[in-house]
Image 1 (tube, rainbow, N blue to C red):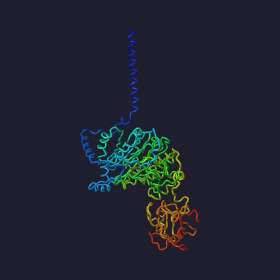
Image 2 (image 1 turned 60 degrees about the vertical axis):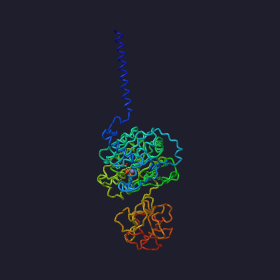
Image 3 (image 1 turned 90 degrees about the vertical axis):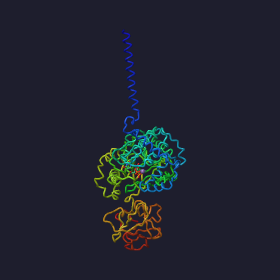
Length: 569
Ligand code: UD2
Ligand code: MN
């Protein structure tokens, strides 16, 4: 009896032991299960049977109208007759030929746009990426082509997941039909959808995606992109080497008119700069050693939509300014912050992704707020130190405007991360950036005795037009802000006064080779152009017209007084 009892006890003990092990195993494995299995709200919702039939029919109709091989290899694509005319109309409405996009295969093949030598690099990254694609009322076929390109061009072992963030689109096809497409056509791929209830704007939408990402690296894309072969490997490899490197691929152009994938060739490319008005610009690589390189190249800023960043580093370095609304500014904010707070920003020439550059926003903004201006004012206050003066000369109304919002948290972040001053950034990262009142002989208004001033006559910074004369404003406005640079240019931010045909003076892109863009400011106030041996003159020039050069003489029309002088020749 006693023996039996002991045996039973032993069996009980064993059972309990096995039970404990099973419970432990369940707990441990559940830890390793993907989060979306635990949190259904991030998975696309299951489509009901009734709707399934409707969606299936819609998709079949849609798929039957796709023209095989249209736009293959990234060739320009064309439709005929009514389709072509409808395409033209769509282009005017959506800044994209939506008719054409709908007829092109979603998984079209693109040629390899990389420099041939890129294939010699044996990348073997161990990191995995979460690709985050945000959208607001984008065209379904364009969103799906983005998703397909990521799936087709990224080796499975490098792709943790694709996260689609719907920033409260109102377009119906981006709801159930999209869910149904993913469920039926891309079932075996790890694709999550975050549905935002009230529109957050692209900055906070990206944050929502980042919050649920599980990959080692976050790669953000706009919802109208196409990745090309080998795009992910060099990005992940570089981050594996240096987790503080934030990377952008070369961004090629997908033409909005005909969906052609067009490049600037495979050797030259540009990197990111900025203008004092707070806009992103493309600039040539300055340092000889960096030209024609295939390894990552330093970039002072990024365009914003397409970039890769190590996930933890993204949070460590301050993710995004959550108080930035709508569209714009976040790209320069992140660029300055990364450089000033100990990271680097680089363009990776062997990674190429196409993007549809649209002529206008096909969507509207709530309240018609100038979010780009407001967001840039925020970043100017936090990151640009005294150099913010140039931005606020462009946007004086925003300088002390409560609309800009509270900046305490971002200023605290800057302190916490012990970030370097903006001057350090200008000196070390972007030394070629022209600073209108530093290292110049003279700057400010250039006025005559008749209270007339040199004026750009509202010419855009990338246009060519006459160097004008206009009544001096009572304050220093950007249109009348000129400098004589150390190189002897009479210039604005990017445009320089140049003599054409021996007498005509135009503002045109500064080329740095002097010649007709070279001027000497003499103590007597004359501005002399040695190439044509003539002086800048306002004689006989009406208000709002262009100045000229004439033979030098002692004349009030040839005397110019700058508001500030450093040195005269
Ligand atoms: C550029 C960037 C863009 C962003 C912007 C500045 C590139 C190629 N693109 O403008 O990513 O950094 O500069 O802010 O570098 N969207 C939302 N919610 C909105 C508005 C837009 O989710 O309220 C989505 C939109 O559907 C798109 C993405 O945000 O997928 C970027 O918008 P865009 O394509 O209109 O911006 P883009 O390329 O002109
Ligand atoms: Mn875009």
